Image (cartoon, rainbow, N blue to C red):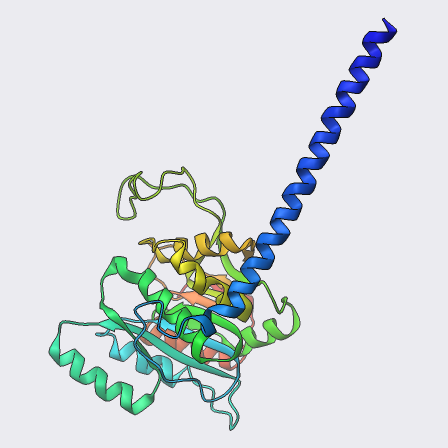
Length: 314
């Protein structure tokens, strides 16, 4: 009986020792891989002189920006871009701390192409990709935008957003200055373990993605990345093929780096089935804001309205 108990103890001790060795090996491997990834983050720009993506633009940022804003836009959306320039998209200070750029692919419409050339020359804020615009090509836009930012700009944080979004740039900068980490930041409206849809507009085949849920990701209408994250995502474009749903694609890339997305309640995304222009005090990013709605939100936030009554729909 004593021999049996002794043998059992020996067996348990051996199992525990094996588990401990395995954990130590895994941790060591993770550290080695993390160090390797960090090296890739620092070396890809010097090792590769040619663009890795469809990026065409080679113009560099004029200065270091605390916040770099990249806005996904379509060639035909001239009015949206101009309204953003006239409202939240321009830092009018002598030494601007932030700058807005618009991400655009190619169009087969010759009139739009001609107007875009004039717009690009007039404002100097358009980043171009060598691909034709399509609803399912948004990941190509993200790739070329991130490569341009990491290769040609110096910045502390990057906001990736769309041209139908209101951004409270003043409050966003204050938040980033006071309340967020300076590194390894991926922040927005987080979708936790979203279910993969096999039907409808966003249906995905098993060949495209075999899992039942996606890695957690931030909704694509507006999310923030620190510089180091953007720098580390670019070399992963060779590892993770573009996924046709762009915000999920970013989540896949960030997951590879081992970063957990941070949810923030001031990123507002109204229900897609409700057409409204709701004022929510202290909003940082609000989706579905164009035309008069964008102007109204910009004026109200600029004047510092914070009465909860103004949060009702109108």
